[in-house]
Length: 618
Image (tube, rainbow, N blue to C red; front, side, top):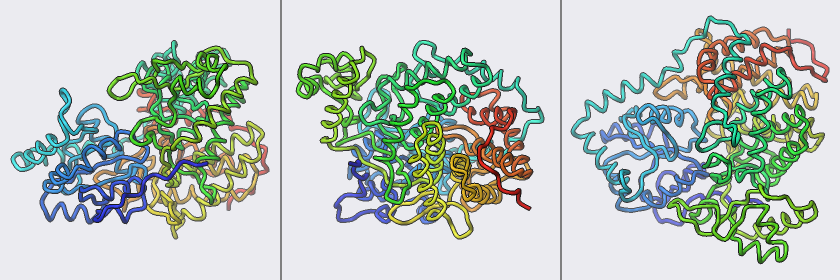
């Protein structure tokens, strides 16, 4: 049984312009009293005609605080009237438009030092931001102003201090082009670069709980892949191997890992991986399944194979569309409660498990007081299942899991966003392909091929380039660099897993399109968007956030393609892209770990291949 679909609008009499959109996130706002428009020429022209600032509000279907702000503020007629009177209001699905999301996320981080979603950017009529924030409550909370107060203050400043705001917007727009001005380093790629980066990573490692940093914890699979690759060189008793195993063990037994259904939640709000932020994203699960399978092969821990299996089984059961492609995400909320589908009362376990309830509660950390606090910090006796206690004997463990899973199946499910995104499907194709070999499971290879068939068939434009999204039988939005780069890696993994030349030829086609549409031959690397898609700034996607950066993924894919096909141009472009990433990766390795992984691969002997290679192209 799959989750229900994300809401696609309500039964209002006068829906706004979002009712015609295909994105479930946008359509969920179609019956707000706000006069939302999708991003595009119409919104920009209207802002210029009315001489009003644009309010560009960005979110996504699985975002908890996006739902909260929609209920509290965007559905309020008085607040909507204020928005409609003083702004041209635009809604953006960040998953459809990662280029816009990146621009305005850079802006909010420049202005405030932090970011998040919903991302609310106030802009000139041309779209240049001059102020941005995230969630605002309907009434003032301590030092946090209400949304209405923010709207009034921005509107007043626009009328009285417009020159200053436009000057700030111009300076900020110039700063947003910084990645496009980056030049390749003249320093070579060598082991000292990787060793220095690893030292910085080791200093950020949390030796007590695994992971990196001391606050909320993200799994960071790209970083762990890099360390796993380093441990292959340094040995199973190296510090790199110790960081990988400590982190993978902690994630697998933390609340971030769905014990009953399989798969992983987005991140943990605490240092010890106990309490998750509950949305489930396709990309996290694809990257983590691949990581656990690689770690199983290299480190020999059977538990890692089990985690990879259950993650892919969850994805195949819950996230796959009828054509074989994979959906985007599952929501965090049920009826406005974050995590409601996943939380348990001790009394529920007692009713379901009887005499075995005490053992189950001890194993899973369930108590009458609860281990989960609501957003106001109140304990309501709700528990995340965290299997850190004494593990029951196998037959009893299976019985406990079975009864709890059956009971959870009866609950209302969180909503499903049915968008198929090309880049995220590329990541899942990679995961399924690699896991089919690592875990000796042919059905994973079949699933990878079905997904690839659909992406390269139904999600291609007439010129051969990829489209970003597919929903309700239609593809929309021209694809970005990451769509082509992640699919390139997926097609190569598919070829290496099954030895079908078709997939190698498809990889060559996608690589050629990627180079033609996105490569910067003057300064190296790749632009995020095609020329006709660029808004405000010509950006280059160079950081991992949270998927592998488009430039690092492109470099890694082209590097492997050059080894498989003796493709000199691919090797040259890959090395030029790595030169572009070298300096920022050296100084900020946690943000550029996939680029460092590509550098590690460039410095290592090519991985062996069991397939017979076709003749090199003429």
